[in-house]
Image (cartoon, rainbow, N blue to C red; front, side, top):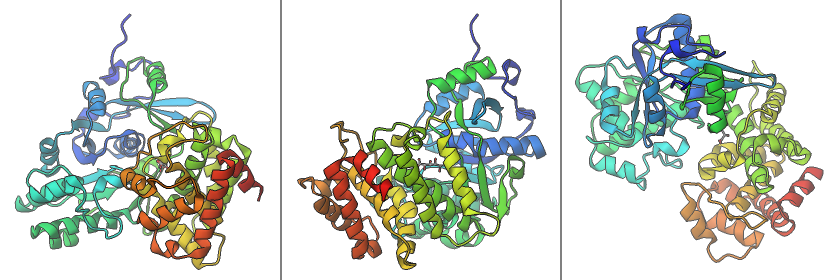
Length: 489
Ligand code: CS2
């Protein structure tokens, strides 16, 4: 018997739970930029719960800005896909009906969708580097070729800033209310970050839109959390078992999910509370906690774990020395945070350890290690600075930085080469070119020549000495031994 491709709710024959509403009875109200696995495991699932709980015209037009794969998977399936949740005790599946339409690598179609008056919210998960915003200035990065091209031809935009700008400009001239812009990437103050970048873009163009954007466009901040590994062949097999259909758009994730959002949506929003979203006044404290504890520990364990030969986060956690260093990092990061009345950082840390330990989630250390220069500032350097200011121990942050530096060499202790997968890879290579395998020289090159680590740390001798000391051990004794020695301290 030939197995059908998932494309209608009526085709679902396995244990997967179908949408508890008729997707076709709901119009679209959201455009999402960055239709990766994370969006499908998180915001789309929350929107699905909102549609089931309270209805509304809130389905999502999903845009993949660069590649076609996800669109080739979802288009024939009418946007339907299986969300597989893997907990400690078992696996469950849900078919998500929240995606109404998909657009791939097609700026004109994207712009048309963004100009549609029915669209009231634009959400984004384009990764930290996807905005083309210079993190030092908060303004559009003139070195980014797509930004530069959009500044030259703003009517044919391809960048995130260019698309948002052109769409808002068209809405303004048509007398259509602006959409609310909801950045869902792992960046501190993500709402303000995108607002400042977009206003900067409008100013550079002298388009007359800057004041309107700052006055009338809402940019709520939010903290998003759900560990979502890249989908694999096993994911599609599991989806077929759960739905009885072939599903090329399936994603798998943990059971945990969290979305903390600033409630500022002038044009309305889905009742995301049905999916468990929390609406609060102060998102920044949640965001800082997540970036410094979850993501900070993730980056530390990704560099050290990958170099020590551990493929998945769960393997890292099975190594007692690394598990201890994860604990140490979580404690050090928590110390740099202002208390959050509704939360115990100790409980949060325990929950993180349990989530990292989840044996059924295959989350690759190499995946997390990617884009270090985009991640380390908010995950490692910001808490390191606060630790130094308050006289706390800086060593856990120096350790994370030293293993990142070791990772920058692009070859394991066993002599296997790998790609850094970092947007600033070429600059790192330039800074390290011709340098011997000497901790002092490498640390100096990455602190002084490659302008990336904040000046406050670069100029702090205790910090530099600590990074260089750890890197010396890592290089002389190998990563595995260095981890053992570090955990034994
Ligand atoms: C990870 C995050 O890849 C990474 O850098 O730290 O994607 C992490 O899994 C998510 O933020 C969890 O919500």
